[in-house]
Length: 494
Ligand code: FRU
Image (cartoon, rainbow, N blue to C red):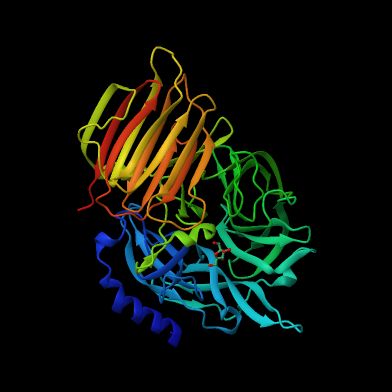
């Protein structure tokens, strides 16, 4: 083991335990200590699900990337394991960037990641070279492959950028061969995804380009994923510097799902539908896994590069993962719902039917910061109303609201008063589709986040909030009248 990795392991072992469980979310993963960004290496290995993450243990800032490591049986309890990689080789001394995992034919665990090297150009500019690298291990200890890097800029199609060539996602096909897709940037300032093939997981060669943004959906595509889902093929990407498009795609770092069909023989991906993955403020770089029981589960970073100004100053961890989501396709669109395992931890059910809401209303038993709550909102006798609003994580000072305007079918999430006074985006609006006038919202809260799933997963929206836990009131109000059903559970992890 290198000195750098040994140092990181010693640091997290020594200081990690100082962070009490109450300082963290209960079922959303946070780093052992320090900084976490993208999920990496989400995989099934020797009977357990492993997850790695972009990690800098020494500060709550991004720094030279290590890989942190946890494993889980239920996607909600995460057992901490020692960090597995540090930037300790000449080809990755600028960081071990994002990547993924598969299993080698001999049963060893294979990690694929991006090695970053920094150098100065002749005119004094800092430049990066990004290459694809491997590490092989046993579920605890990993060794970087002696033939690293396995893919370099020379393996990119003409016109792609070797400085932006990152985030390999690997998987094994039914015939035992492996595929890898990698994100890159094209000359026309667009994002692109390129696909590679390997017989043994170690020796890789270019198949060709898979898709690109045509300068429309972002300037660089990070963290791609590609998999079959309910008869379609899904391509997920996290675009950088998106131009906004209506309420579907907001400016900056976003998440995009492209559904289509894929001809493996011809390496031809034909798009049918494109949509945002998350319509909230904090969500980025998701990665998926196929579980043993056949579900496609996605986990994302519940943060965003554009809103880091809002992070708390005195916390010893920063970065949490969103709740894993079960993916499916219905009517040609992506559906996302919280992983069903969360239902095992529900308790203290409180329910109300047909409550008339026309002014501010509190309902006995409807409070909390670790909850799973479903609301059904409908008009009274078909009459229209101006808006309905639910206020969450509330006390005299703080509140996060969800406001629905049926006239325009827009749901707005507003965390302007949720702990951060940083000058950054605090609201996001997106379209929802009520069914027969009924809007259904499932709301998950876990101390420092709110995740909303509209109409059985047609839209998902996540935000991070950093207010005191005593801000736990929930109220409802409307201009005009609505009828409301509430089913609310506390989540109990003890
Ligand atoms: C996405 C990303 C990746 C990169 C990693 C670095 O959030 O920018 O493209 O590999 O973070 O930490």
